[in-house]
Length: 114
Image (cartoon, rainbow, N blue to C red; front, side, top):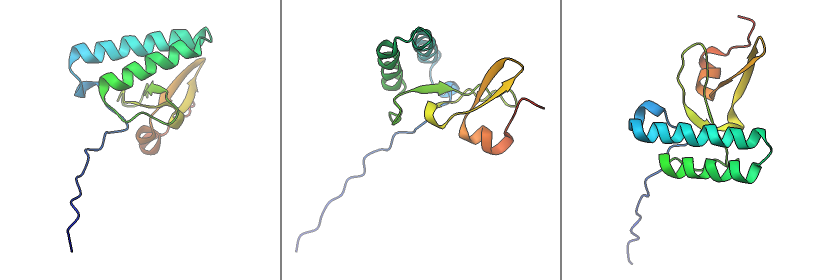
């Protein structure tokens, strides 16, 4: 009877903190995500999706099912995590919408009423 050899493929993270990236890569990712947001605001969703895909490849994270990334803008800790937009929690502080990653929402959920 033979033995099966199983190799373990490295798993890609589903999120990343920009401080784990080199400064030039972090700057490129920010630029790509800013451009993607601009295209999405103009309802040019194909262009936005292509920019998200470029950012995903650049930072080497597992592509989210939604295909869209967002950045944590939590005002309690400023973690700036880049993660799957479908899992984002949002809150309004006045008229400004902020985004929390799941970790921030679990650890210190904000509602804007603080």
